[in-house]
Length: 318
Image (tube, rainbow, N blue to C red; front, side, top):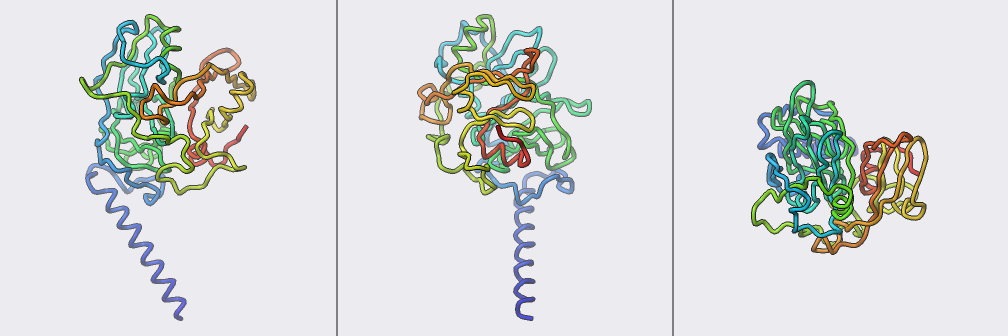
């Protein structure tokens, strides 16, 4: 009988803790429908800043490549090339402060996103069920990854996979648009007539990394999930294509990999944004292009191994 009451006490404490977590998360979100979720709310935690504490960019402006003088040649940029439009570079230095840029390219509304804690850089089409959404940063994390929210329904979205997890749009998926990360120098050389995102805040000291030596840390920040299999370093960069992952170190050795209809090519070096205090002084990490057998760019991401495993637990590792 004593054991029964102990178990009952433990169960009641667990229920109380879950209720407290749910109440804490829902505070400040009166327009979010918490009756609709695809994940357990106890998997979501505060990352520190509250709602919009990390301010997304809503009205981005751009410079001609030839007019940009502030960005170091080794600094990483996210590249978006949509057919018929001038290529655009989104320097990672700005995402260390803003994490999301809501943009429109050739009539296509896009959300350019980067989560420093997972090294996940993904571009999404902002249209869902005929409605154009705009995204902000909720301040919450799940598996150390940014939880975004849309301002129209205040549903919550998992940045690494583009899936609605809480609210009216829970279960919906954002379409990902092919993009890639490369050095500013590589973008400039290939696209001398391209455009580059201008500094969102005038006079702000962009170019600093608040996550000093993060990508060589022993463990990820605010992550208590399962670690990758087979002794893979949780902070190793892997190239995700669908439900498969290739090691960036393998690509560094082999330079080109052709497997399962995917062609991975080594495109030289760029600075890690998550190493030294100044981004342009970061240690060298590889750049990759991912295409299909016909030479078309494929949707992919270069993320930390722990994040890939967290969101693709039944995936294939190469």
